[in-house]
Image 1 (cartoon, one colour):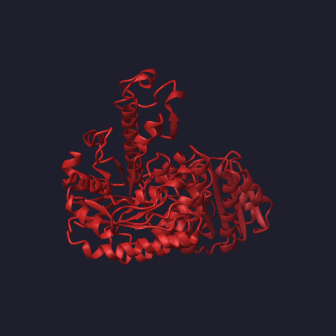
Image 2 (tube, rainbow, N blue to C red):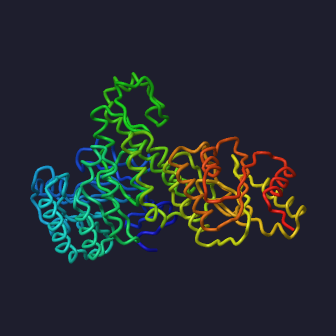
Amino acid sequence: MPTFEVRATDLAARVGYLKTKSGLVETPAVLPVIHPFNQIVKPSEMEKIGYSALMTNSYLILKKSRAVGQLFEVHDLLDYKKTIMTDSGAYQLLEYGEVETTPEEIINFETIIGSDIGVILDTPTGLTRNKKRAEETVSKTIEAAIRSVPLFKDKSVLWTGPIQGGVFYDLIEKSAREMSKLNFDVYALGSPTQVMEQYDFEQLLHMILAAKRNLPLDRPLHLFGAGHPLTLPLAVALGCDLFDSASYILYAKRGAYMTESGTRHLDDLKYLPCECEVCARYFVEELKKSKDRTRLLALHNLHVLSKEIKNIKQAIYEGRLWEYVATKSRAHPRTWTAFKHFSKIREYLEEGTPIFKNYGLYLCSTPDEHRPEVENAYERIMENIKINKRTLVVYFSKTNDHTFLYNLRNAFEKKIGARSEEIQFCVAPLPIAIVPIEVCDIYPFSQYDISLPLDLEMERVAIKKFKQFLSRHKFKEVLLIDHSNGKYKGVVDWFTKGKVVQKKRVVTDRRTEFIVKEFTDLGVERP
């Protein structure tokens, strides 16, 4: 079995298994960060919640070992037998400016204490706007990686190559390219914490893209410091597989209560909107007054993060990650800003998006008209189908039921016989495409639900696609059947007033015999 095996994909997200010497870690996964010697929530409690991996700091263990003259085995120290990832002291380097160790010492120490996943001693960029300083951090990290790789003698340890560059995307790209040459088992994007603290999710998106586009696809990408229920769906959809965070306890210490849509301060709550073991056992006033408040809040926050990851994985398996991320992103304007940018990276997201799914598409509002399945379906229609017929019958409806159009085609065949072969019947599930009846039951042309009437941007895209379809196929006459009860009014009005087709008519009647007569008047039935 490979070290990392992908089982399901949607957008740029993967559900996979990372094999470590202490067991399998199903990804995407959050690794709670714990202090090696001061644990408010025990690793055993995290395991009961469902966490199969956690992260601790090897540099702190190293300092303790020096102080007491004792060597610790990390699994014994934490009383946790599953996967443990160890950081190298880079956080302390970012916070305090220096650490009392070297890349070589940290690699040897992580190996000796039994780390399952180790991290080299990198130099974090942080949120600096000084590009020269950022370049230095990239160079130092690459230099540390080159010094560290020859020491990877214990092949049971998975080694992580950090990507630096901060908010300078070209430096992230350079860092990712250089680190990928060193064949790490896992790659990690560094320095996003301060960006996330500012809720600058659009910048986070660009940082992730800069890294992912320059890394091998068969290795997981870890996002350092990400542990917020709004960050996780976006980051997973963009291709991140692993996360670590101490947010569960840091938030708890300041009284922050995680929810599916963000955080609330416990003192502001009248109710506990959760059914985890903590919230099911305490009333809100009891929790506020509890002497064990911080630990209980931390446990609750761990439950929320665990549930979030499960929801994300379920959405990937169902092929509904786009809908899930859209729903989550609505919780905050900054996440919605980032999500809207998905329309500009369709080709990137398309690589992991299945062409056929078990569930239909939901198109609610912009930017749903640009989701990969929609754009891919439209391109298949435009590139693979060439229609050489005189007349177009295009059917607009509120539903994805095409029975009426099939019946209408049969009525025409009975009325005008072989001359009906000059008529192309199409359905119009816009903003997806104008779709010939011969392929209208292929996914997703019958497997969708569209919120009507369309918003202005979706309507603009719908008109553009309709116009391109008409321009490509050069029909002499077009009859538009509008059974949408006015839901496609903007598109129909454009058709009525436009000049792409000179001979045209709009019909709202539902009687097939009336529609056949309208076509006769239009000139379809020729001797």
